[in-house]
Figure 1 (cartoon, rainbow, N blue to C red):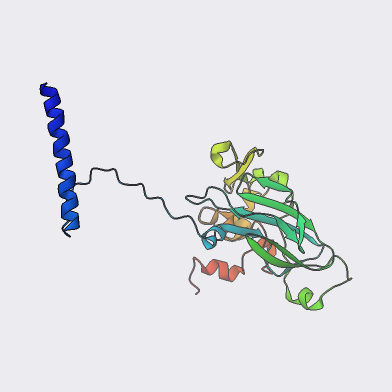
Figure 2: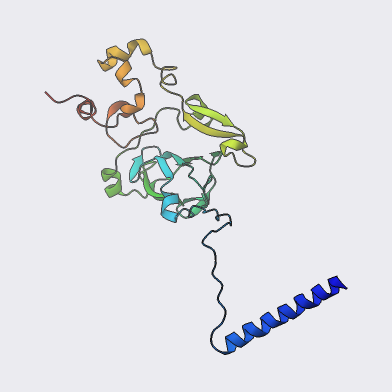
Length: 255
């Protein structure tokens, strides 16, 4: 009996409140409920904005060859690298290589950070491009279809001997294995960082270094300070990045 009375009273009270709220709304004075300043809900996680196309393209580097360079035998070693970024561990763009608008398969892909193609181009000017770069090259393989203007104006792009052999990349670079290192499915290895000047001294005599260079080894033992390992368009011997005078002036003041 008591429980029934309580339920009836509650029901009558709810009906009365609804009638009262309706009457206030009709009169133009609806009830307003003040929300507490204390927000007990968990804050929503803020995700970083997705990278823009320019940010993605800025992560591509064409190491070889340089734009508007030429080769005497028509051989070029195309080497393109990608640097991962937060929110984008792998390049989302197509890395289809096009040679004069014709698709050309990459010879080697090391994980998701390095693409390599050894091109043997016929005589004449050629356009090479993909999502990350576009360059023009000139082949002097024969005198047929030659372009004297490009042939005379564009510098030769020499490479380090045997660098076009993609199987030897790991002689100078670290060899990384495993999916945690951004290796794509079906690929076993990722090309890692340069292993240091020990790779150079595996072939070059360290004992003759100071004599040939006229300089102590320790301050310039990183050969990349002066030498462009992947090739250069500078008309200097030994793949130097510039003249000896310019290179020395980076550390030494002119007398």
